[in-house]
Length: 206
Image 1 (cartoon, rainbow, N blue to C red):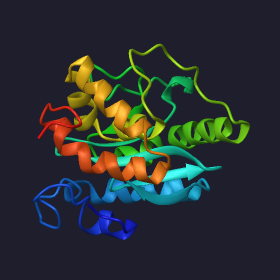
Image 2: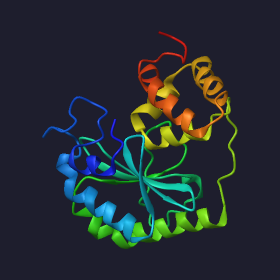
Image 3: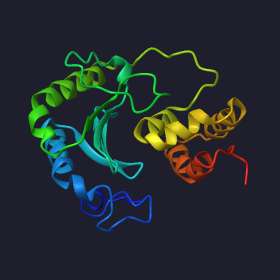
């Protein structure tokens, strides 16, 4: 997976064999992805790479992440439960997503048309970060670490696979990750465990 931001916009995320080929999902959305990048940087967000995707932060918090699939590209908001969505543009990543959290684009030209709305939503999300406001914790069968929640928010395929796991298998990931003291260690371990999750296995299964 990539670690340099420029690689995403020129080669892709590095998660599959289509990396740095004309068939990479990022290639058909090059113009739109660069427009989203321009808007995020122009709003004052800090650009970084997380989970092999461009992630934009403010006041130490993740605000949005950019992603591309074959059929669309998207701007996904963290802490989506806080977003008011007055324009009704947010959609759920999938059937197991709790809150609408992404703006989905199926045409590169859509980004410019929605720029005022995108800027308004970014401003709202940045305001919550500045005020230290977080969404209320929702009841869950297990307490997932923040790093796993953010990884699931940023990766629809991973989220779908994780929610399809049995409760026991989901719990195995929570136990292992919660036992790690450092945030960066948890993030690194999630990347290593991604294959297990996609394969429907528990954290310790081979």
